[in-house]
Amino acid sequence: MNFRVMARVLGVLFTLESVAMLVCGLFAYLDPHDVGSRGLMPLLVAAGVSFLLGIILIVSGGKLSNRIPRREGILIVGLGWVFSAVLGAIPFVIGEPNLSPAAALFESVSGFTTTGATVISDLTEWPRAILLWRSVMQWLGGLGILVLFVALLSGSGGAKFLFRNESSFQSEQATTARIHDTALNFLIVYVALTVVCLLGLKGLGLGWFDAVAHSFTTVATGGFSPHNESIAYFSNFANGLLIEIWMAIFMFLGSTSFLIYVVIKSGRWKELRRLEEVRWYFLLVVMGILAAWAVGTMGGGMGALEALRGAVFTIVSIASTTGYVTANYEQWPVATYFIILALMLVGGCAGSTSGGLKVSRLILLIRAAWQEVVKAFRPNQIMGMKVNGNQIDDVARAQTVLFIAIFALMSLGSMVVVAVIETSQGIDFGTTVSAVLATFGNIGPGYGDVGPTDNYGHFQPSTQLFLSLLMIMGRLELYAILVFFVPAVWKKY
Image (cartoon, rainbow, N blue to C red):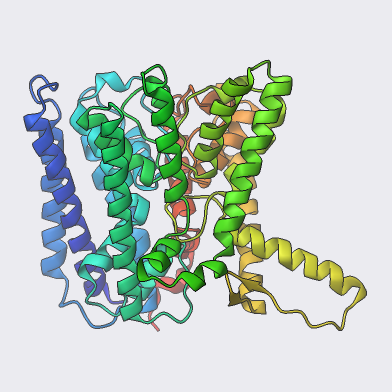
């Protein structure tokens, strides 16, 4: 195990995180709304701790080699996310009105994984600088904290392993140079989307603070808002409807595969036809909107326009795993529960900022199931399979089915764990199921006591820590965290 290489990479990562904290600290110093600069010291202390730890690791680590081995690359991803979340929790622990360590870690993990679940019941009690840090965490985690590392500082041959194990982007034949170029293109697109979203929100009447905070968390499909009412805070604005539409557009764009933007940017228009995952995702969202609109209109007692407005924003928010809300969808007809639950599980596209199982896996699963049905009466027929224009072999198909099976089994097991821990609190079935799926799938709000008007603050510390682990595992798609529990990983070879 090459601990020196791991220390070097993690040290640079933590140093970069300290810079982001320092920027939020500067905002705290200049913010006229923060009387006494309450957010300044917590952020400066957190930045100092992160910077000091980063420098120690950089010094103790060796020179960054031309190649990071596969095992070390996977462990860097897992450790990087865990310790970045720990450092990111410091302002919530020492800043007023203070969170417990478990709750602070939950909030930080929810930020970096762009889950959007919160334990804070009243955001108005917190300094705006710390609320800005919540948004910055989601922006950093949206594209991936190590994807940013690969894009900006990729001098190592381990870029491929860092990139592939942190993001849902898959490229079997990409070289290190191409991975660096892809990460850099992703970053350029990410920044461009954020800037356009920010300027649009500012033009629609939001102040600079709200525009920055919401553009960061919209494009990152994170869902943290500095307002208790989430996006419903703006619903009664003169441009309330336009604000919702603008944010829905960028939630969708953020949850769409960034490959499509890279293809457009490079002018390779013919390749757009291969990206069928985007077409499937668009179709799922449209079908979800129409279904929710129809149910709301016919069985929910809502007017056609009111139902359409609520359906568009809610379905896009849930499908993109952003978790913003403008309406309490728990008051909608029961049929919409199943529509929302299905979209929660599927999520957005691979290579995007969204969570969930990903549409590409759904496509592969449906086609694999169809082929198995055909083989039941035509066992000798040889059938190929393509997804996004790429040939899918038996190994890739088996890996996808195995991933979905592991995800399902872990979800069921996690529901049992949460139910056992929270037995004394009288947790109900709906809350148990949705709390696990909403955190494991990086969605945020669920149903029951974790619905769109509630939060996760009532859970016991052990439950909050367990759900934090689920959020990281869901964001890293299981394996970068599961390897920590495999003894062979830590042995010499």
